Length: 138
Image (cartoon, rainbow, N blue to C red):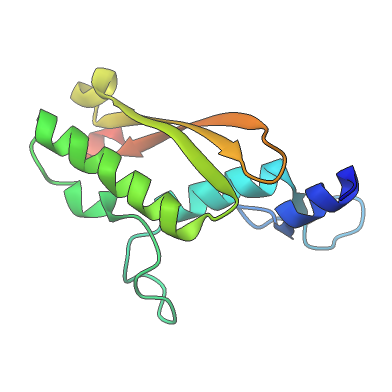
């Protein structure tokens, strides 16, 4: 398969958050690696039950919002992220998921993801801030 065919497999979709292209006024699109990164964010931002037609879609970290911070909760966040991405993002292989509690007093956990794009074998990473208290809201 040629290089363009590998990239086509990665996909093209609406940009997240939804926006319009300034030059044309059309819906802005994301392609390839950016589309994957945005899909990961969508999975992590969605709580199971939010989507009417896909009630199991999303990540269970939202169930942990009011839990008291502990090692058990950190492991539960890591497991919920790993489970959700394994099920809902088939274009990647997770290399590692780590939860950094350094901002926990401010109401934020940093979820650090390292992953490999299956089709291209390209590695990438994403740091997702998970706000678990009102005081930590952006």
